[in-house]
Image (cartoon, rainbow, N blue to C red; front, side, top):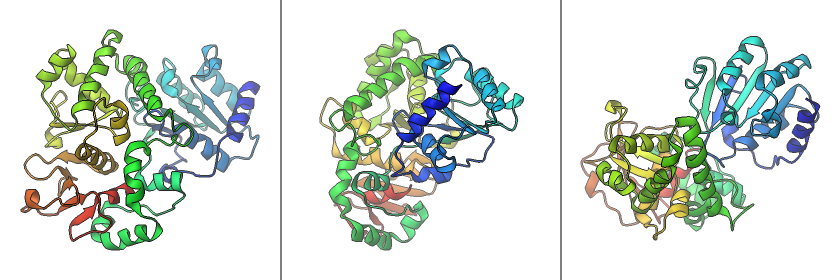
Length: 399
């Protein structure tokens, strides 16, 4: 146990408090049991350590941070650590990388039942399902999904430009005022296209040369390790899953033809659908349906995008099309806190069942959404709104 406290002290001292993401304030940290999920690299571990630094004095033994991928847990169980920690007066047990421990849900549930006044905070893969595994934690555990950096957060992290976030309702109701606020602080177009290439994951400044290789490593880990462990994907098919991703990276936005995907990857049709859902849960792709309310478990999506533009640039082996990048960004940013559907007959996307959006360049017209109520054009390469034509970068201020 002393070794765990020593390791915690070292890691907390090395954790920068210079910038703390606003996601911190969206979490109910007082919940008896909560879990923060997210794709690799979005900053979950840093967030947990920052929270400890904010709320506990240096050297405190009332809190314990540990990661289940540490060698220590090859010979010690969660139950054992939790029990010893509790006996020493522990109040908050923070468990990182929970998905890397076999039978984690069963032991977490038993720990919560045995020590009801011990608070626990977990973090894990986007694939983590609280109602799966050996124990159903869905009723007792509050789950949060942590995204990568928004364009607004990129400006703060990488450029030192601090600006507020706005709700979608605020952006649509007061676009000129908000655009003026941003333009008075910086020239957003100066930074926006750089963000599309390397702004989503908060580790570019530390490894600018290795940024895309790190993204590829993350993808490989998700496919080779997490999918077999968390979703029982046959390891022999991992290469075909990567082939599926490669096909999508070259052709997104992909008008879905499951038969063609099955032929290209050598997989059965139902297996392709199953793997697409897994890749969506893993935050590697976004699946869009034209009517999400009637979607069935194995229904094919209407359109597929990579989860964020940085993934697109990292995985594509052919030149990335500007239009694809724009739409990928729009789906990614609008999808945080909102329901995004494929527009199909009118516009590119329908949001929350009532708003219609068309995405394009500076000269994009309203011809495709002329008769749609509550419709807007998200236009690249403009700094200020023009009626219902809004700068595309503005939706990067939703969080």
